[in-house]
Image 1 (cartoon, helix red, strand yellow):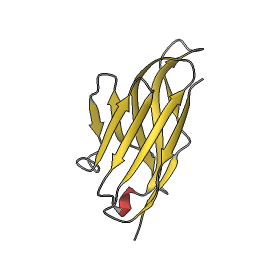
Image 2: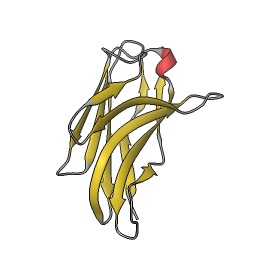
Image 3: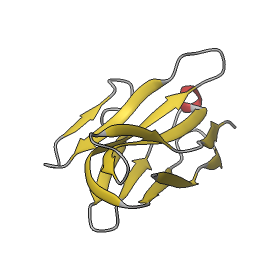
Length: 121
């Protein structure tokens, strides 16, 4: 089993910055990609950013140039630096990992419990 534990988040004023962290634990053989998704009230969960094992990244258009995703493969961790935050960035942010772990025969998706990010003056 794989557990993802997020940290960071909180309340920040528009234009401010926040940093999110997520660490994976468990008997993990390999992690293909890690990323961040978010879900605002009344909306569907959406991709924010993803980083693959080869370090390639993808970002939602709405966060390009403001958010930066990074990864520490040795620590099985992923980070999201969020700058120039806007009220529309308010959401619960979820960590995601596509991992191959003990007890499975293929890569599977795992999710963290989510952390609240609120942007308000």
